[in-house]
Length: 79
Image: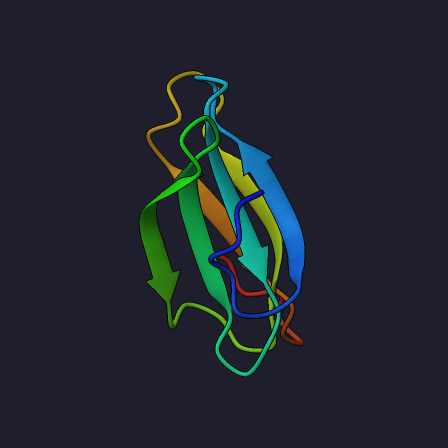
């Protein structure tokens, strides 16, 4: 299991390569973790984009070059 999150995970997206995963959490300082599902190693952690939590994640479908995140705030902020 991937255990690097510091709060409850509420969103997940799988990269088109089938190996890279992004997960988002709730909390005072929500984080998005991008990690390798085979090695269970962290590739990146993004902090400061959202308040409350990260409700949705999506990689761009063809190449996975972009990751869309949606916040759980009143405006469902996109980043």
